Amino acid sequence: MQRPTLKPTDYLDQTALTRIGDEKSGSAELFSTPRAVRSIFLSDIHLGTRACRAERLLSFLRHYESEHLYLVGDIVDFWAMSRGIHWSRQQNTFVQKVLKRARHGTRVIFVPGNHDEVLREYVGTSFGDIELVQEHVHVAADGRRYAVLHGDEFDQVTRHHRWVAVLGDVAYNLLVRLNTWLSLARRTLGISGYWSLAGYAKRKVKSAVGFIYDFEDSVMRAVRDRGLNGVICGHIHSAAIRDIEGLTYINCGDWVDSCTAIVEHHDGRMELIHWLVEPQAANLQPEQLLEAVTAD
Image (cartoon, rainbow, N blue to C red; front, side, top):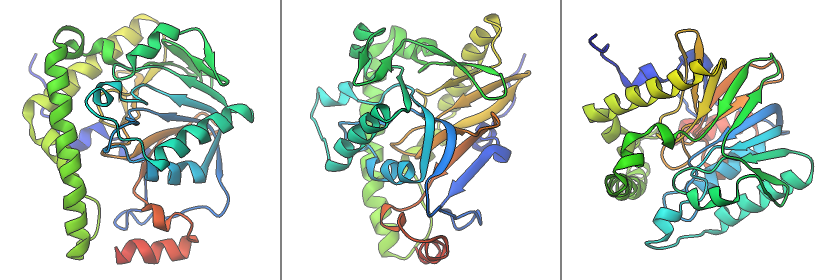
């Protein structure tokens, strides 16, 4: 059977997407007090690299609190750190913030990915009140059951051709670093909005779209066989909330390129947050933020 032609927007369920800080969306709102949600799901943060957008992630966490916090793999990038370590003050603050939340009653569950796979040796133990697991079944407030896993086990390249995966990782990180300079040039020229070179390149490569399709298909087959209602994963840096033949596919995205997270509300509703707020604007009141974003 011939595959359908897929567009980049096919991977985002627009009814479940909130773009915080995007002047085009008309939803540039922040909260004077943190917004309480039931669960937060984060993946692919890649601590230890220059590409990690820790400053935006801290901005997000200042505005969201939760009962459960899931770290869905590739939180620390040991692959990249073997070539050179970049550990910023903001990255250190993120680690401290997670540890503090764990100490103060937030249930923190860490599912290691392929970039931090060395931690899989310690699955079943806890570090500073953080539970380390290979996989977890999350029961949402509405009773729906989701497998929470990183997803690299469904990536044939990562499993069987590691050198190709490492080479692709180096190329991707190069594009992300180039994007830093491009963003600076856009701001200097007064061009508004955020545009990602790495994301653009990924969407334009036809094989990348096919890879995403294959990944989703493999993940959902495994979930269906286990009688679950859906899956929450990461790995491919492509955020989504989609219904696939009656099951819910959720991908957290990343904090390297897209700056996305999944939040579960107290009624069980899942929402994809695209955090576009510049860190220097994070402490502004909503009306001030709207002015700041529009002027960007």
